[in-house]
Image (cartoon, rainbow, N blue to C red; front, side, top):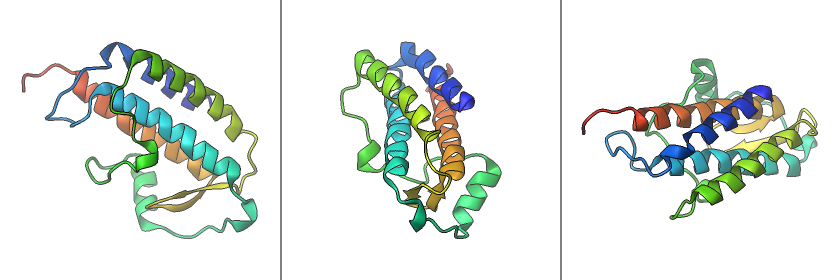
Length: 155
């Protein structure tokens, strides 16, 4: 979980670039990527906490295997589900509040049973271990996009 807290800290460090955008990299600004990443952490962990571990059964999933082996998500291949889409107007205050909630959520994952799970739309049921890896991969995916947005290069 320490790695996840460091990722949240990295997201927090990008708050100064909240409104920065670069359409050639992403249609969304830095604030959207920060808030989306945090909402994913919160909603995924809520889902894990509410799951019934007796319903989990491991099942091979090629997409998951590729993403987990590459330790990365290809860009532009999926659209964020409504539940983890940030509000239209993102303020520094709203992001700071979401940062706090996401940080607290991470500690809840430690309380889960190993076979509690999150049902991912492409990867299927991810137990706590796989969920932890997914959250790391997903957050890093958006941090890379943020870095590309804030890196100067004329459009």
